[in-house]
Length: 387
Image (cartoon, rainbow, N blue to C red; front, side, top):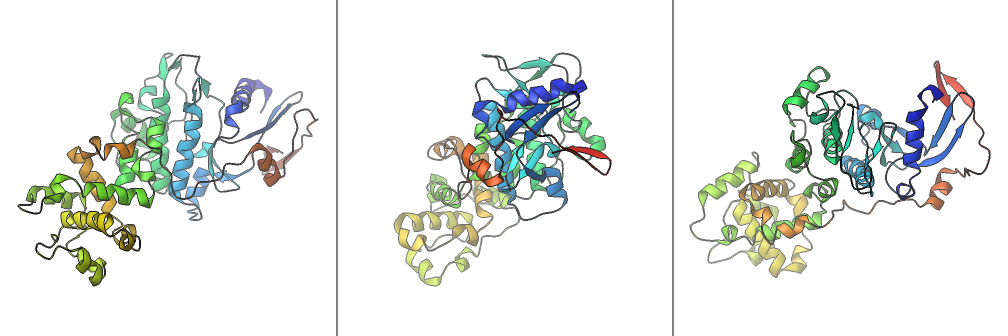
């Protein structure tokens, strides 16, 4: 970067060299050099931007993992003492590395909060269409907090899961819609993903979820944890009642099912298993409530048989339906469901975090700050690229 804009580059260098960020999920600092006219910031090798990945419709990477990586990167910043605010989240500033991980990059206008402070006062910063509601008023006294990054991160998550969409519409209408709080999530079908995004992009900053809570959201739960959730819902007294079943409750559940019928749920199981678990005197109802109670009793009383059944594959939309319904009933705020939302979530196998040593081994970079750095330039289609 030209030294005429040197403050941006030096700011990024200082932030990236923070010792607690090297093992994080943000793009890694390698080295810095300068000459008479330019400063050179050498970073971890990455393949392409998130924008390029989504526009190329490359299905090689799991979208859920990209979403997790973006939030994990943001956690690395927000959980420092004191915090770092990114302030310019957008698809072009998320890079995909050689291992397929998404990493936040471009910290030129990021700011580290002074000790014991939670807000940074400054002029409006960021990229049009990728700015939080409270930053759109202009002036010299914009208040940047962790919640400012969170709203834009929610836009990024929708961008990933929708294949390039934006919750606040097309470019020409985004600023107005962000200001008004008018959004649509129609391009994402997963109700649990929608719930995560809605908790992040709320117009009111104080209603947005902190990044730690976002990462423990049911969207990231393992199949085993989702099944455990269904078991606990099956224990709710409204579900356990076998007589005079509340028809309003069933209707509400069916509405949350979004047109998916569960009236023939017995057909998904083997006849022998149904015969084993079913109540001969009063069989389980042909409804979602009956299915939930069946699942509960299967897991409670026949664990060996239950271990052979992949409930998430048999009923791929059931968890989202039940989660949405339970939330509307307030059950998620009460024990025993409430405790399920406190532990940090994972998505499948733990993703490897490279240590400083094996990172250099893998990308074959052994740049030492104490050694002279050779700078080469080349021209590609008229643009200057520094390598």
